[in-house]
Image (cartoon, rainbow, N blue to C red; front, top):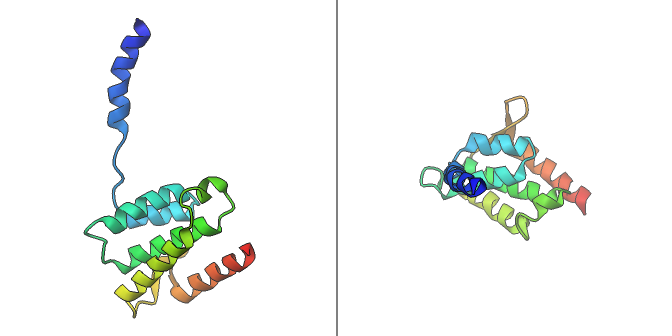
Length: 132
């Protein structure tokens, strides 16, 4: 009887503790840097679906990086997040480019300085080459 009462009181707290994911590019970028692709994917999906970031080139570029990271990772738990992330990554990169063709940088490097798009593209190309 005590266990049942305990569960009755605990279940509402557990349900209330589940917060919806809020759009945030810095949190998505931080999760990507830490290699937490599941967290990064959830945050960036919520971010690009929000009205505030729907037309933000950096948000779409970050989505492309996260999905490309999922595609090139060797961790099977992250690979199972999406069946084929490459087309989604490619579409996100194309959307970022179409929104802001003149931008030279979308993400910051580990030291906090902006990384040029060409640097990121070269890095991702090497990752795909190495995984093939």
